[in-house]
Length: 193
Image 1: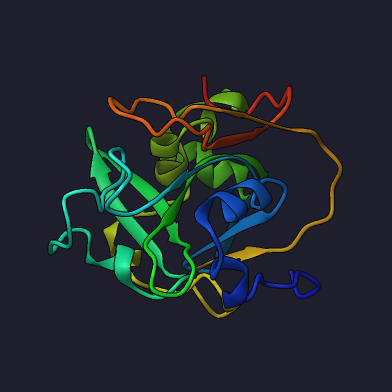
Image 2: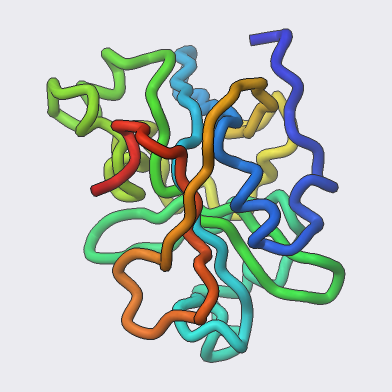
């Protein structure tokens, strides 16, 4: 745990697509009480601001989405079909954007994750954005905290590994941008279906 270098704020002060492409392979670490749950990020999606019809920011700044305009490296959580979606604010100066963490490969705290999700199959634990937040006990209470400190209840740590990355259009969006903004580890069984 102590050897893990937390990704600094400047990692997120870039184009959401660049951030979404580089997050797979990094570790998402969640502290719940005195337990540590963590996994390798295997799937992400990039979202932009007013010009992105699939973005929470598309209809302008509102109470529910104002975090999209705030500092990179903050957590932004919203609800879709009764599932919390875990995003990290990522954008260049005076821009708008975020990256949705869609799936992780569990590494630590699997028993707690199984209890939280009430499933046995490891490949079902965290293979989708709603599954991931249930497994890691992530909810709106984490909204607005930074993922850039080891003291945080949730943070992202650097991690060296070799894999191929693939891209596709984002999942479950009615109107999408023409670019492929979903990034995932090729052949990884923890990527959402």
